[in-house]
Image (tube, rainbow, N blue to C red; front, side):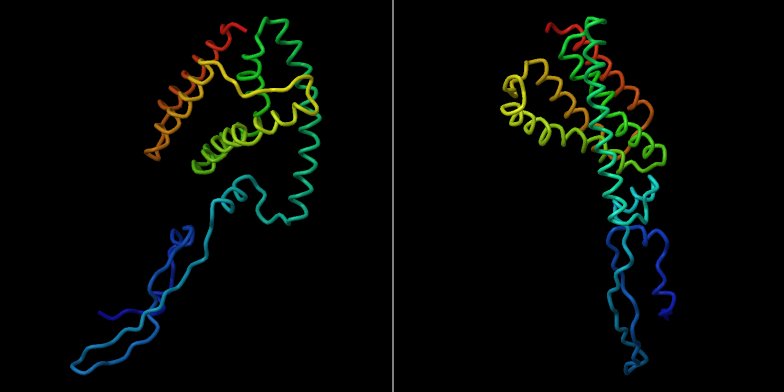
Length: 217
């Protein structure tokens, strides 16, 4: 069978979207005694598209320069910090008027309102069938809070807080975190999802929200 070097060097579009793709390229052909032939093969790396490139394209930031990206990030950070101050004041008054406990406000209410931008982005990525990005946004936010923000607030509380904070959780809070991690691992291990799994996840979240609402302060 004769291989066409030109056709062998053409990469399908699906290959171009992979992270790392190596394939054989016919570089030379030399006739051998007895009518055979020797083919010299080389390895060629295709253009790669990683997860960050797909995310930039999906949210419309593809092609942004480093200066523009940093400027938008800093401006957004300033506005987020400003809005957080208004949020804290409004949430405290709302919680008192509706009889909400501090645990419910911190675990449910502030988490929903404070992460609204991330939630909307994750849903947008899921609608565009970019589930890897959606999962990374949702899970990455939780990991960031657990491993960075919470310990940082504990250390900052000794200098700027009214009293030192701690990381002592109640039994129900530990159970809720364990349940959330277990369900996340169970849902994502097969790499697929459907509407029924989404309904079940929302039902679990609603059950935890009701439990935290009636949890004694």
